[in-house]
Length: 299
Image 1: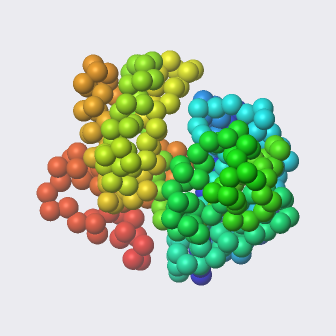
Image 2: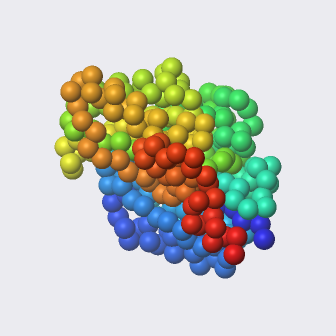
């Protein structure tokens, strides 16, 4: 059986009832299973993970985007996380017996339908990108909702892949794509100095000369009076979590700032945590087949 994962990010992290309504429309699709949903009030963002056979997941994603268009108004939205749409991003991830090319096709089909039926401009990104400048989500989303509102229709570089050449007045625009597993990893620092978090983020992200496969930004977590280095790990095997943690910790120490905690947003592959355990426990001659879950899967 073919299995695909979809991880839509919605620009709503403060009204649980809104997210519940969006998720409810998605899980009402037969064959679409909810794996996880998380909200963050400071970021004002929610991450939802669904899984199932491709057609079911495709339909569930469309219904979620449709409901978000109805319930989320970006003209009234404020939060730490960059955003350009009520449903900001919607990637497909191959899980079992599904190729990346098939996920690209799903992204294209969803994009066409969202553009035509919901009149939301769609940008294809990552492996589904139609041009090199749109592979990187940060470049696609540059300017956010307010900036795109001014540029779409006047700047040819901002012409969408699908949908009208104008911003949706309340739902904005959306990036739909295909990618491998991504780990959303945040490290909290014991200071309220946002400049420190932003400086560290710049030092560790690949675009700033830091670690390969790491995207990072610095944010304020106002309700805790701290700051955060928020990261997307686009290849957790190429750059493991423990290496990122140690680099952030080392950079923070330069400012006399401690790491006070970390968090994972959404789901994480078991291998990524096993790599951390192997590193910090200094295991000798460790073999992957020693993991209980691997042995049980053989039964």
